[in-house]
Image (cartoon, rainbow, N blue to C red; front, side, top):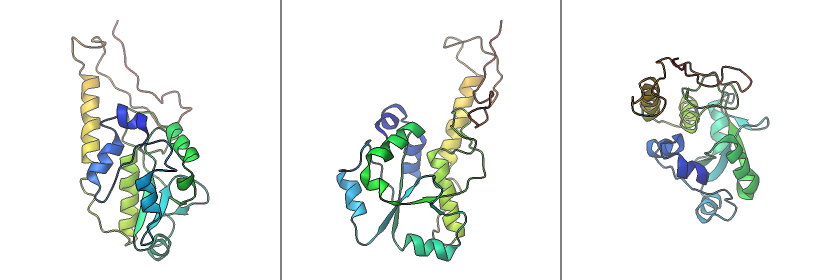
Length: 203
C-alpha cells in the first residue's frame, strides 16, 4: 500500500480487502526492495510469489484452465497487489526491484466498477477489493481456491451507498447546501466528457 493511500484513505478498498481476506498482510511503503517482511515471503522456499498487475505477457487467470493455473501457481502461492492510485502503483513497481522480478498474473475484466464516485483511468478498471473479489471467484471456478465470497463486497457496497446518500442529502449547514438531489454516475472511460459526477446547482 502506498503511504498516501494509507494516510489519506482510511476507508480505502485496500484496508477493506485486508479486513475481509484471511491470510492477508498490508505493507506500507513506496520502495519494497529492502523491505524485511516482503523479502521473507519472497525467499520462502516452501511457497511461490506472483504480482497481480496488468500486462500483455502475464499469466491470464481468466483464460487458463484449472490444471494450468494450479501448475503455474503451485501449492502455496502468494499474490502481491499494489494498492494506490495508478500513478502511485506504477512508481511502487518502478522502485521495487524485487517485485519487478516476479512473474505476473492478470485477469480479463468484463464488469463495470461499482465505485461510481471515484474516477478510473480506463473503462474497466476496478478498485482493489473488486479486483481481489474477481480473482478469488476465478480461482474458485478453476478449483484452485475454495472461498466463500458471498459477502466479500458488502462493506464496500455499504460505503458507496452511504457516500451517495450524503451527496444526495447534504447537511443544510454544510458544504454547498443548495445542491439539487440529482446524481449522474460517471462512466469509466477517461476521455468521456461524462466521466465525472455532476451536481446541479440550484439558482
